[in-house]
Length: 76
Image 1 (cartoon, rainbow, N blue to C red):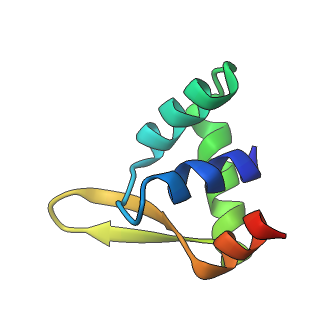
Image 2: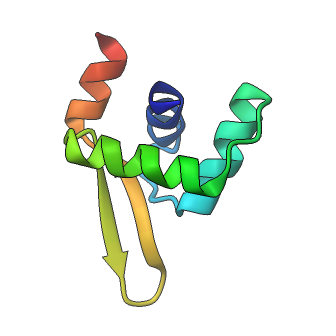
């Protein structure tokens, strides 16, 4: 699921996405509906690896974006 999440975030062209939005895009991409908990766990794992970053925003809540390391993983 991690590569799918990275692909989803890269396809958003730098726009930040909530965990719920990522979950929806992953389901659309794979045809399999992952739980929000599983998606959030994968996002946290990717963040520990430096492949995504989580950003807290006062007005919009916590959102995710792919990093250069994440983009490199997709190219790997």
